[in-house]
Image 1 (spheres, one colour):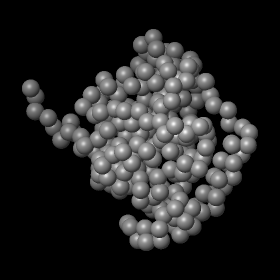
Image 2 (cartoon, one colour):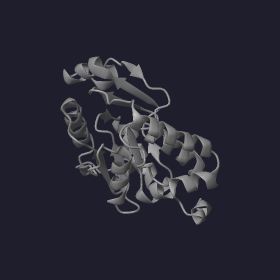
Image 3 (cartoon, helix red, strand yellow):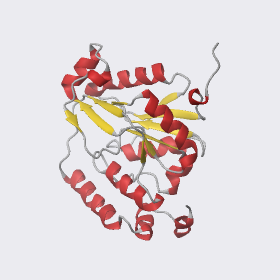
Image 4 (cartoon, one colour):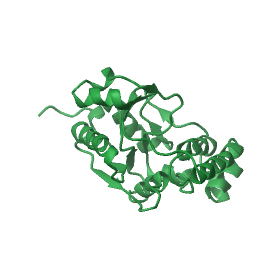
Length: 237
């Protein structure tokens, strides 16, 4: 057997996918799981569902972190999103010691129905049709340790259902950790499923909660209070 290089060796890590079955999401989920098992076979993969109704992504992500050792690297992947392996491995190695959250991409490609059909028939992901390039995306795949996640309050499970939890988290990360999440050159590919309804009283409540994060952005004391961190946590570099 050829000897391993430092780039081949990953720190202790796990992959966790927040997941609740829905008919239109199963195909994407199965393809995402297959990709991880082919490309990171040495890293265990599990799913998480906190049982909240409606489904609460932030709570699932927080639970994924709570279930891991404080300094273990946790890859929290959306169940419809595939990263690129080199960027992912780089981010896992860096996240073990960086003290910030890593995003393994600089470009977010939503393939939609057309691009997902391309992938299903064997077209390589970089060559699949892209229905939308999502500017400013800050979700899809998060990589960090539970210790780092806790240092900036994790994600706010007060965002019920769909919408805004990732953008709010991004502001909290930047404000409390002093920089945005660190990105690694690469792409992620979001596969097709039926979209969630982003309207109604719940969505409006999420939008109002998001405004609180906008108001606190840049103010460490205000943001710490918003996410429920004790005052002494502000001294953590």
